[in-house]
Length: 91
Image (tube, rainbow, N blue to C red):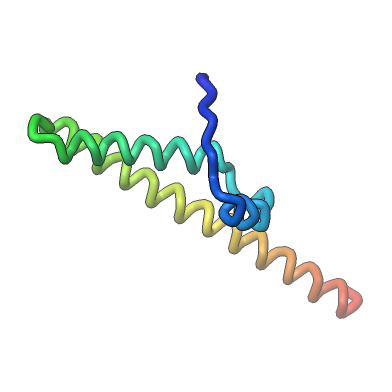
């Protein structure tokens, strides 16, 4: 797979570091780049129905992946909170 260098501001980089290992930044960038390409194609005058359908599929996939990641993070947070509650109660 080709490599692409992306520059972000210091402030955004700090916020990304704050997220830690919770997100796969490469996957986030790939989804975002793909969606931008499809959105651009859909806005062009010569956009075909196939372009529109592909853009919608990409958008749906992104929403599903984002929801999955949010659920995974919430589940991990719940498990860690539950573990610390159990530990503090001596169970």
